[in-house]
Length: 203
Image 1 (tube, rainbow, N blue to C red):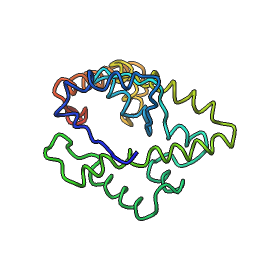
Image 2 (tube, one colour):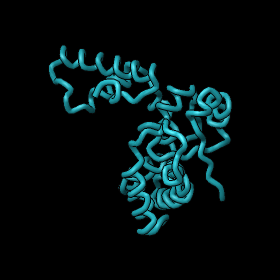
Image 3 (cartoon, helix red, strand yellow):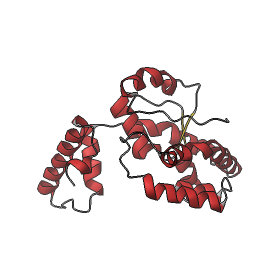
Image 4 (cartoon, one colour):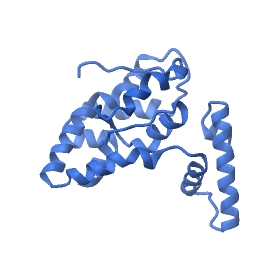
């Protein structure tokens, strides 16, 4: 593949589901992610009603091989990118991962960051697939990736519970914990209504 495409999900929000839903649901088309369960799958499901079929995840592949799970470290360790390219990717991530992506126009560096992960993902997947096959781990890794979309589907109550469980402020006492989960559930719903990040609604 010689061309990277960056889709503006803000400008095309209403068209995303109808345009891309059938492709993501097509079992004949393999979709390659890195850490699909973290943000990608839940947001595709929540914001656009897109369900992913035939998923491949390089982070799950790396975990099965005991390799680094961070994408940049993994790309460099697999020999897919050289040290200079990895350093630039790290710099772009530091500068733009948490910036306000609703701002327009996007600068050239933001576009580079947006497409940077996907640029090398197919080469990384091929490299990891060869190692998995050589170690007899390909089948198990494939099952893990194929079931990831179902595990990661966005659901308000479950999402709130998972957010609360990861928060260092989450109380251990059951009654307080339930209240904390309800607060996270409210925050997530409020953020969705105003199209804002949860932490912008309530830190």
